[in-house]
Length: 171
Image 1 (spheres, helix red, strand yellow):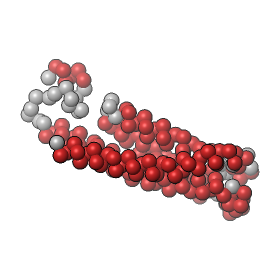
Image 2 (cartoon, rainbow, N blue to C red; image 1 turned 120 degrees about the vertical axis):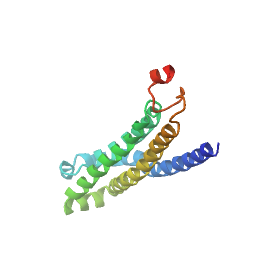
Image 3 (cartoon, rainbow, N blue to C red; image 1 turned 180 degrees about the vertical axis):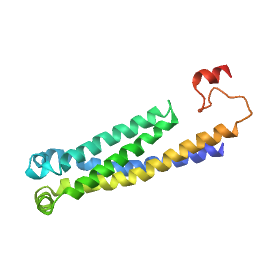
Image 4 (tube, rainbow, N blue to C red; image 1 turned 45 degrees about the horizontal axis):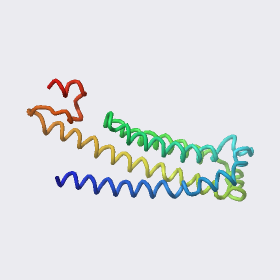
């Protein structure tokens, strides 16, 4: 019973951290969408379209993280989806940041400072998201594997997460 309470407490702490990481850029999303759309049409956006990156990062991140949590009921291995997503977004953001030349950076800084701030926050959030989602996925997968191997020799039950549903009923 203590294990369940420990995981519940850990889950609440992780949820609080994830909400904090997501709410900071999401609060800027509405402001950025309304005031900086023209940044997607300037000449700098051909090489480094940070408006598209920021919108994609914010909209897809919440959908992928939420759906991965719901899909964990199907397979615990789907808890790796947010880690893969954040790795992709982190690499994409780093490449955009690297190809942005000095005149484009100064243009974004002078005319679209809020978009540049949101872009930087999204890149930083992606790297933090990699670490947090990987740690949570490793904890979940490790727990499932530990529970499965600790039950060896006993009769599998319907709730055994490592067995497919049809094998659990016949065992």
